[in-house]
View 1 (tube, helix red, strand yellow):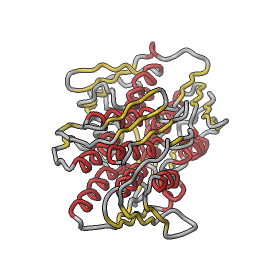
View 2 (cartoon, rainbow, N blue to C red):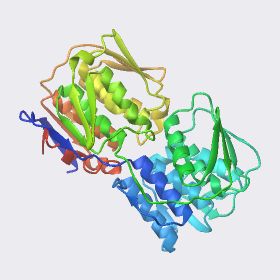
View 3 (cartoon, rainbow, N blue to C red):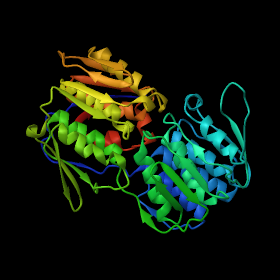
View 4 (tube, rainbow, N blue to C red):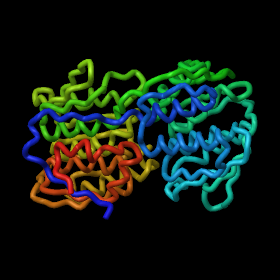
Length: 414
């Protein structure tokens, strides 16, 4: 059966050495840039996540003209980036995806691309996928305006192809654009390889140009590092070493270092990685500890579980984008935690945890909702409760294939 059973080891006082995976977000952007540049320079340390492998395989098939029908599963980034790319790639293409992708923000991207002259149509009236794309030259005619309900992946998809759009693009962002660090990552990477995109306040001005890709290496993934910050915090561990993890100007989730410092985790950067250790003197003494995750929604499941297990009063704000991830993460995390103890609630897209009693002599059965970040986040429960069982364990392949192996030094795994 596709499930995993975890319980805490009692003998893990030695240094725990974690290899960690590389950034899926950086990897996927680099693959699109390299494809458009038609320069096959090497990308070292490319992510081995399912999403990145899927996109890499699709790009190889497009380039070698061996396939024109792509099934994107429930991979939001892969799907959006691929749709934008195919809209400017000569040929007729079919893009399909899981049912969950029909519920996620895809139509706004299709509508914007069609307004630029793309030829994208739906096969069915009652759902988005499959779609048919006839690649052609696109040209902008007027400025594009976004509201703050749109995912950053739509904006990144447009930015990635913007050097190849006639007349360029002018994109106006809202004042409180969610996940802005991911857009900044796209801006940094596109400009690094030859794009000409300027940012003035909330306006992105993209000029026509072309990419000149060169050999590069992908950073370790700060979004995945979040799980080990949580384990250090909840387990009050002194010795988790994450190989090759360094400071980052590209990844917005680098902020987790500061978030978890508030919760007692100290980070020491060494030449070959980062050493995490717990220091109770760092833990905030605030009556209610508050975090705003508008820029870092992907770390919510892990932070929410951490806050619950610390058994203090917390509020996590600005979570409206979580309804449209691989699952409805805000609703699902709240329900799973409340199945254990009813101490969480959602108020105006904010997540509130209240201090209370905790019966740790439980064996928990956890539903992952086939969502990689929920499965990994809920694994932290095994530090406190007797035993936990998580379904759909293979869903972690989406972003972190080696996750269960990496935590085997901390948990007994069945």
